[in-house]
Length: 279
Image 1: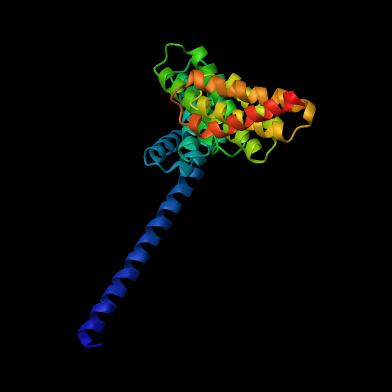
Image 2: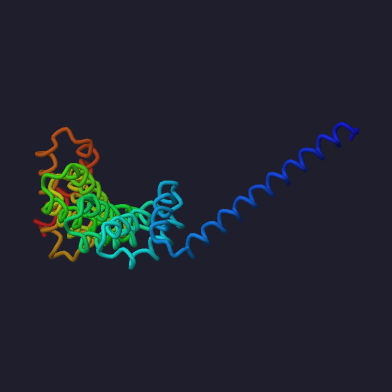
């Protein structure tokens, strides 16, 4: 390496270390300033600093100040703001379970405040955002639906109602997809009695499901396989139920892609029923 390259590399290193030192110094100064704010006895100064932190999206520091100011401003206009922005901080930090708790507490403590309506909508949104993927337990999804419905009942003319209904539909779809997957799991595990019960229950619970055609198709197969594995006395009834579901499919969906796939099974069922009747 020649002298010019060595000089250039040295300069870069020096600038890098200077930059790191400057960043550390600024961080230290910021921490020191925040510590001084926390120690201050001037509550108005703390309040203004907390709101400034919030506007700068420094939610951790804003929360620290909101926390120490709650008692000082309880029952005052600033107390209402502190209660609301505490919940907002947790929401924006994606700590949704705590945020929901603070939104509800805000609504209880300040029932006539201007932000109660958005706070209760946000509280329901917290459960929506906590709703897990389809394969997991959907308790938060059910809770979110209940919270959104409570909000709609309380504020039927709110500008948030349309959004609440869309989110409810999204949650219901997710729950239905999980239930459908459970039905299919029973079928794949050859737990035919459980599959039949699950399919029937699913259709009753979800009358407008996009899976209706598919489910009726699987019910034909389920009853047929169930009959094959049944004792002789039960076979006729279950084969006939398979044919009944096939007829339902052809009546409701005459152009169904599943009809051609089921025809060999249907012919086999008819042969089995003929054999049963001659015995």
